[in-house]
Amino acid sequence: MSYRHLLILSGIVLIAFGATEGGWLLMAAWLGVDFLIVGFAHGRGAHGVLGKRADGTLPWWSWVIFLPLVSYTTSVWYLLRLFERERAQSVVNDRLVIGRRLLASELEGEFENIVDLTAEFPEPRAIRVRSGYRCFPILDGGAPSQEALRSAVRGLRPGRTFIHCAQGHGRTGLFALAVLLDSGVARSIEDGLDMLRAVRPGIRLNREQHRCIQLYNGAVKP
Image (cartoon, rainbow, N blue to C red; front, side, top):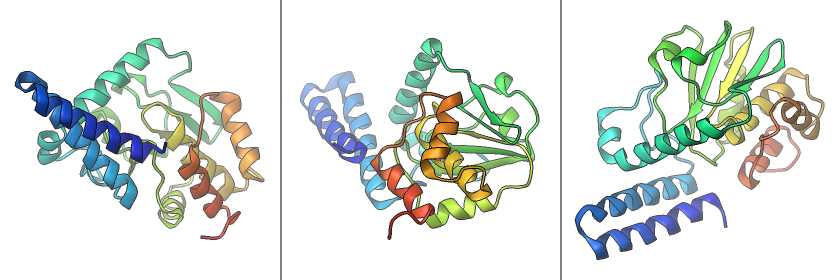
């Protein structure tokens, strides 16, 4: 089952459960509606559905509509952070660092580019106010068009780059792989994945992300 279909199915179940039980459990139905919206947005490639701005913030209406979803994803993020074994930042080479979403105090070193791939989290202010901050929101488990990906990669400034999503696995792996291929550091998709997994073993691309990077690299036809 694809991530999109899982979101839609979960949304339907939560809506039915919340509507049936009522009371405080109506919050489950609210979360279910959020899941449905994001699930359908996945299908349309609408990665800006939560309205994340270029400055890394979420607008007020997003906090209202998606409050259960943002609360849920934030809780999961903090829980996973407590038990993670990977480093928050993993150095690929002297010009590329990958990792998870950071707390304001966790950013190590100076970067010409800080690429935030999360669509569902606001970026900590101390990070997003840096001159190198770049917001390229991608829904969790999703992939942008190869044209949008290429534009974002080629819009980076020369110099050291930090790339992150929520946990630093799927979206981060996709974008970092595109950077390695575009720069010629990686000779192939497999070569680039080996480089990334050597420093961050949790890197995984799903089917949609694999197809995106294959299109990016000209390995398959649109």
